[in-house]
Image (tube, rainbow, N blue to C red; front, side, top):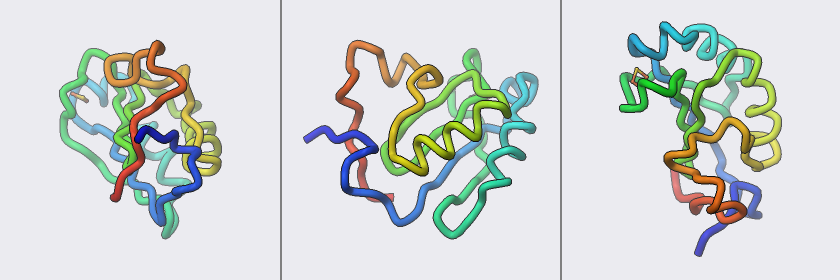
Amino acid sequence: MSTSPSSSVRPQRWVVQVCQHRSCQRGGAVAVLEAFRQYQSPHIVVVESDCMGQCSSGPTVKVMPGHTWYCRLTAEDVASIVEQHLGRGEWVRDRLHPRFHPPETFPSPPSVDSP
Ligand code: FES
């Protein structure tokens, strides 16, 4: 069954993977990582990632559980992802990676699974 991150099933802990490989770094991934790190807590774990294979649309971020991909992020996008996705369990749709979350699939995002 598909559920939105806004379902009543909320993870105990979010893991935010921020690509720090070359292409994403050229696009500003260091600033994105630093911005996410401002929000680290027992419930939000921020980790650096090697290339996630989405170099042409970086900086790339993946949020688990739920396998949610964000693309072309800037440091300015981070607060809304933290508040909206990690806080309220709602996707920040205009930053979703369309390869993984094509708009025609809205409002049926992938299931939130175990971390
Ligand atoms: S360099 Fe970030 S996805 Fe490849």
